[in-house]
Image (cartoon, rainbow, N blue to C red; front, side, top):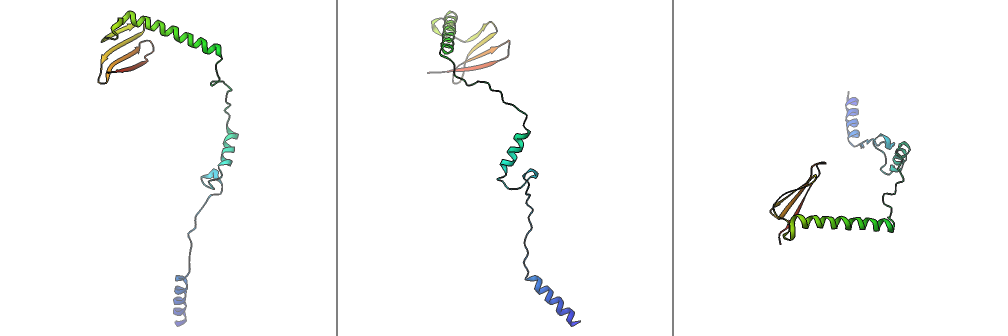
Length: 137
């Protein structure tokens, strides 16, 4: 019996001095939510291999030719001249006055606001709306 007790005491003493470590699971395969963070090339290559999208070669950002630039500029100047003529015809030399004005499908409301004169423009055919504030001097 003494041998048994001595053996148990030695066993408990020996196990109390032993060291253990924590086991941590780390996935090696990055496809299963883990692995090395530098395995992004493998993931990107796999995603590109599965990608069926083909980008169109549209020239959205191509430079306009000199003739196209001149035509656009001329159109802007003509529209600006027409709008100035309509503005002078409607409002005269005194400028905008309060009220509601209708130009075809456009409804223009002019009201005084906190920061200045508020001009609301509504396109009744499309529902588009914009608001412009002309600050007080």
